[in-house]
Length: 101
Image 1 (cartoon, rainbow, N blue to C red):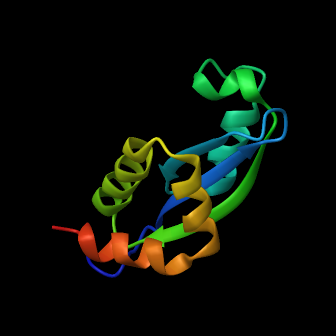
Image 2 (cartoon, rainbow, N blue to C red):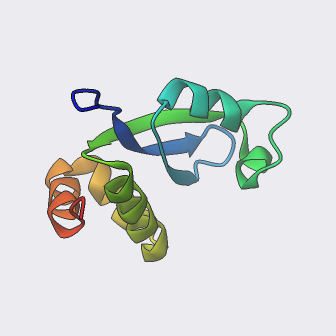
């Protein structure tokens, strides 16, 4: 079974309408962005469409991506998100804090 690696990502979107941010995780960035911007979207992100992909961070596994996504969302802090965008070492430290175990 080994040898096949499915990349997992944490992504940051920015609303072109409000300037607000949205944090998510996925293994398919293009598909997920299309879902966020779809007219059929019934999720939280529909009200602030359209969304632009600002940044993606690759994670080692889905568990790591989910933990980092939750950590960032729990901060509930725009400045923290902007700091992550400016300083990629913050995300690297989160990858160490939330390993794939």
